Image 1: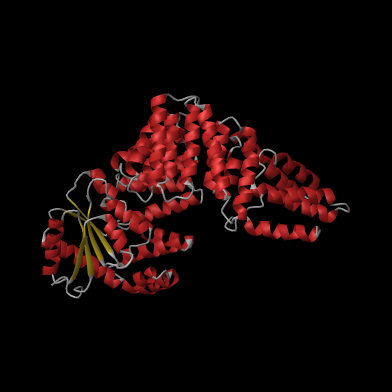
Image 2 (image 1 turned 45 degrees about the horizontal axis):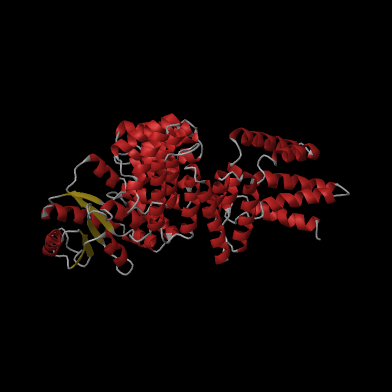
Length: 539
């Protein structure tokens, strides 16, 4: 019997139709499995997996109107880490349309079974998948326990003797290396297996590594190989579009994403990328169409965010000038839906009110818009809490929309101080402050910063200070620029007899980046320079 030895595996069948669940359950019981349960909704599975872990989940794609489907359930299980590495997840469906099939396969279930399913086919597929899981059980167990170092060691020891599951083992190793930040080791795996049959994932992984290193031509070559082998590999289109976006080739990025979404239209993240690409390409009407698709896919998706609804509302409101009443009302309706959809998000009520103020202003209702902003300010004072970084940025955008541009910088600085006092993150606030600088001025800042670094290297401290100081007014909160200037000022102070003015200038640099989080790549240098500043200015 193919399932001999797996009799005690715990199996869950997920289907909205009890009759179908019971039919599959009977098949499994007849095969000798003893622990078979059923669930009729994704929510039941999400709740149940908090307490019980299943070895096999057989999930129907369609779980009823207004409910998560099998693809969305798999996405959420993976995102919330509720599906163990040692478990199997099979999608069952009567759908044969390419968009449904591709959309599901993208999430890499362990199997995809077309209805009607025969006992013989079910037993054969389960036996093969369970046998592989059993063969790699020690590695999967280490991964389930979060011990990736042990999993890597086990996989390494197993590799020389493995023949049957060698490619699967290599895929696990590559995943473990990338998750552990061991990029060179991951690269070796990708390069070792990329030309083997069934290893498109290796070519894709290698292309993604090339992109992260800025080697765009090498990445494009890999992606072209993938598409020559499988023109339906939509992940390759995604990566090509990302390269085009990084190179600011927005029209090409849009065209690539349109090809990908025509094949697999139900991927929420891809639809978001398409909306952005169309907007960047200067086609607001087409972007609006993609935004609508995003909202249509959002109600049950773990990847949905309030920003999706805010982006749609903004697109409905138009990018410039006033908006008409019909689109404005639709935008406000979308915002109110986001309040309900994301009721558990901190300060969602404030964010929705601030976004509505922007729409009301575009509709010509300036007084209503101003009142909404004042209401948010009053609520914050009454609650005696600070704005989150997301709320602060939306509030700053609202101030700009209300014509109060001169208040934005001081408002954000105060918001950052308040948030930092409560140990809240403030990174987005400073990103927003820096991103308000026009592209032409950002380029000038880059040039002045580089010039200052060069002059510092040559020992010309005065000229270096002048170059970097000229850049500061253009991007006052640029972290690297402030730290570079601080470093030069401290060096100059050590050489100068009267360093009071230099230290005052240096203190201003520290003040501008005072909320740098520990996770920032420049944090260690910030801490070092701050301590150097204290030594030079003990008072």
